[in-house]
Amino acid sequence: MSIRSFFLTVLILMAASLPARGFELQTLRIADNVYALVGGLSMRSYDNHALNSTSGFIVTPEGVVLIDPGASAKGAALIERTIGAVTAKPVRWVINSGAQDHRWLGNGYFASRGARIIALARTVKEQKLRAAIHLARLTPILKDRLDGTEPVTAPEPLPGDRATLELGGRKLELIWPGPAHFAGDAVIWLADQRILFTGDLVFLERMLGVLPFSNAPKWLQSFQIVEQLQPEKIVPGHGHPGSLEDARRDTEAYLKWLVGHVRPEVENWTPLEEVVEKLKDAPFKFLRNYDLLHKMNVNRTYLQIEAGG
Image (tube, rainbow, N blue to C red):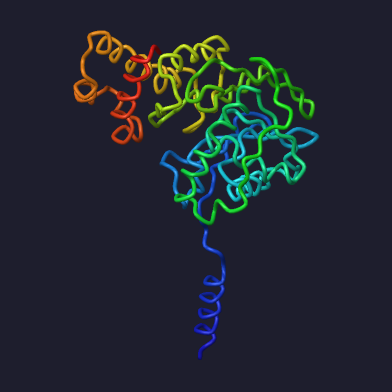
């Protein structure tokens, strides 16, 4: 064997022995010591660890504040490794913005490593109510990647609709804007930098999903907290960080269209099937997952308005 062939063989063997690069979160710097973790715009899958969402973290002198820990223990470990590429400081605090799986089911992993779990009482109530449903839904998707995941909630939930926190010398505000994607979802406001982590109140680049637990008319009302705060930068629950104008375009405008077109049909007693067909074409096809979600959103919004929403 020639020297060239020998080294070529060594390189091939070395490459084969390296672990394959799998799914990775995209880390985006929003401001000094503030980062977004973007998991992509697709639906949940085994490959993406059900991290088809956007979370974030803040680096303080005393440790890291993580906003939303992922949908599983293994997903939480992936988030921790991603943060480790930015800072060697440990995650000391985990804030839950909401009750959907990727907002809190990674709590147990970080709690076992000494982190304090923080959430509003409203959020914790909704988490406990929906935990079994989320785990059942994730089991066929994540399979072995769900192993070790326990539905751990904040042991001392914060009362009321607003809570001011000082963590590692950084001041944050946890605010409940009203019912939206889930009844107890909150936003995290960094007033000094005018950055808003919206959780699932805002979707950018992809279509929001109206769930059986959502309330589209009230979600539209709850969006007003975004208008009131006038953030300069928004870290959404799904999609890449953007501006207030982006949030108006991708979330508020769609909710206005949805509620504005469905409500008159409900009031006129138009049958549900006819409404879904009549409204199947909306001016929001630029949003990812339109074909998968829009007709379902019309269906559920109709039922919510019919029930008094």
